[in-house]
Image (tube, rainbow, N blue to C red; front, side):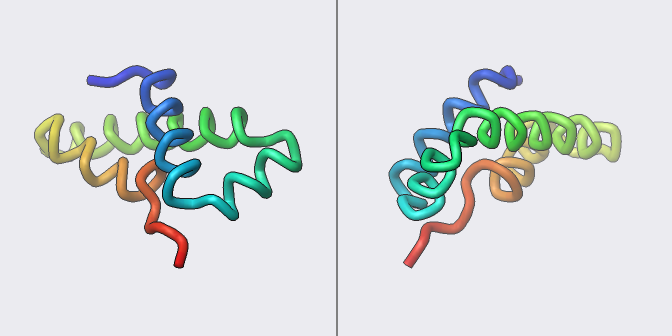
Amino acid sequence: MASVQTMAAKARRHWATDLPEKTRQLKAEGKFETESLAAARLAMAEIETLRQRGFQDHEAEEVALSMFILLKPEE
């Protein structure tokens, strides 16, 4: 399973590419790093919750990533 740092890096890459307005706003507020870490922590917690509910690791990660890390691209 991925680490919080790996998840945060994945969030930063995805947000910078697919969420340029969100990225610009977070960077302007000085929150890009902290928000990506927060999203990673939430994703990791969700993965653990889902695993306890019987999800396989890859299933839990897929759900959590879509909820907190790999957000829908901006229009």
